[in-house]
Each structure stands twice: as C-alpha cells, then as structure tokens.
Length: 161
Image 1: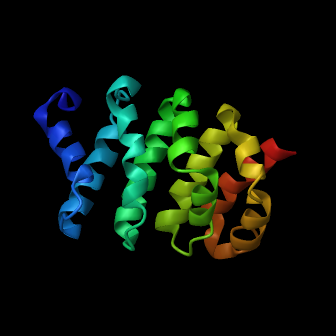
Image 2: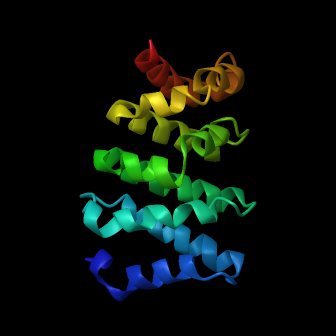
C-alpha cells in the first residue's frame, strides 16, 4: 500500500533533489530499500523506476548510503528477474564489481548478491567482460574474514565454469 501512497513519491522526489542534506538522503535510501524488500515483494511496475535514480546516490562517499542503495538493488534483482537489463544499463556491471572489492561487508555482500542475482538471470557475460572472477579471487577468496562473501562468490564462480 505504501508504494501507492504519497510517501513513495516523496522518497523519489528526495532522490531527484540536488541539494539535499546527507541525513535526508540516507533516510530516503533506507526507506526505499525497506520498501523494495517488502513481503510480498512489491510489483516491479511500482519500484522499477527507482533503478535509474539509485546510481546517483552511489557517487556520494558514504558507506551507509551506498549500502542501502545496494540492498535496494539486491532486493529488486532477487525478486524481479526482469530488472536485469535496467540494472545493467543504469548501474553497469563494472560499478557492481567495484563494490565487490570494497573492504566493508556492508558494501561487498549486497554487491555480490546483486551480481549473483543478475548472473543467474542471464547477465553472466556482462560481468565476465569486466574481470569479475579475478576481482573475486583477489578480494574475497582465501580471506577468512570474508567467509559470508565467499559463499556467495562460490555460487557465482560455479555459474562461470
């Protein structure tokens, strides 16, 4: 019901506003992420349009904001296979891969999950073009502190074989 309310429109408006305080931007992205995670998943026709606005939020040097953006994209890509082309168009595989190499689990876990969702829905080629396997080998595998990420990375690598 919230996706049909003025709240969703206000959140989208915040993302479109250029001079917005970081705290407001964080709150908007956190809310969008939670709305995209809904159970049951909201219809793609209602949330798909936010995909083109989220990349702009990833340019802000704020780990919490980037994490919320990535989780929103992860929820969308997991529940809506049809989102693959839109995500790859607006976010680009190389940007997702760059976040896979991030030191923070808060960022590399949702980035890996997005890559996994898109790869299983036919987007593997886009990631292989950008040396994803090498990035996973360098930044995720053989590092005990990154065990949760290794599980997801292993699933991606098994698709690439």
